[in-house]
Image (cartoon, rainbow, N blue to C red; front, side, top):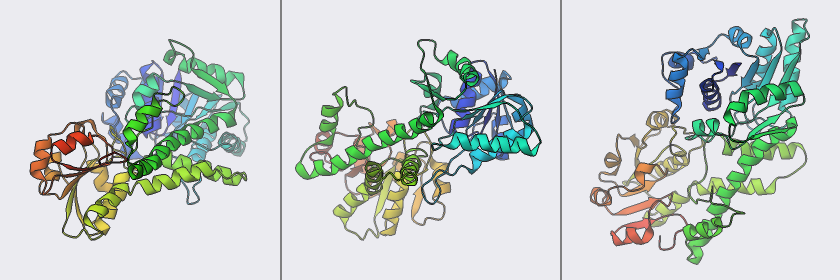
Length: 442
């Protein structure tokens, strides 16, 4: 099938690459000339495991192309995916300007039937706005033309997006006409060889499903983070509690890890957007308001522990910080807890030496202008002469480090672990002062 994907960020590029991997002819459109140049030169503008190989292979085979030419892109695909950003507006609502601009461009240039697919995360009612934008653009040309609008939300985890796309656990399609459903089913059938995972529903339900999924996952994270604070007070170990409740199949083990809060491009903005949608419709989503409040507070939990240990005035102290990206296997710094931790330590007079396996360049960009933070090339360089180690992101290479080396490099053997990577009893046996999240004896 011929497919056009508007946007070459996480959603658009992964979607386009995986569709081309299944034999479709895909054209990816972006107005960012730098991104398209990088892609046409064989690189990728984001870090996502496995993505570069798929992009290169399918570009070499001629199944995946990149362009800034809107007219060419619209002419190419019968199916037109919109995978552009929907950043939060000042009131927390999703900013739809890029989605609607893409829809208008399709209406301005289409010459035959199109299935226009909202792949971006958009609030309920966006499909109707996209339909109106296309109709208006066609009317300005003096034309009436058949087209369909479909909601097909993505469920891709950064760091595992290629795997999620190639082996989806569900494919949600919101549509109100059978022609569009048949085309979407044909497009996704190669991804469902074992059993049918396509869930067809009405447009508002499909749009709502994406927000509901992310809100539930965010709720589980904040739930465990709030319990971790109480666990510390009563002498319980939140890791034992996690295992105890996670063994119940009605609860499960996923997204039950206490830590420094969630970040990234999805959970923060989607929770805000759903709260805003509730307010617009006269429904106060009190649980989600609490989820957001708990998460904001949790990003400072490591700083609170550091202040409790050293006092409010941290002038003259240096902290080694491991992990900058909001999660492992990505360079995404959006809403990353590390940003809150670094800024809070600097505000108290400390210096920070920070290391991340992947996100160094992006961290330098988003923290440009901050005085007192040094970005270093290795774990060891971050440690040398620091007062303590602060672990913020759970990269695999941090899980079993050289503890003797850490102890020798630090001024004092103190670790603040924001991801509960280490066993408190073992750390004590090694002579470390170990402060973690909701851990008994830590």
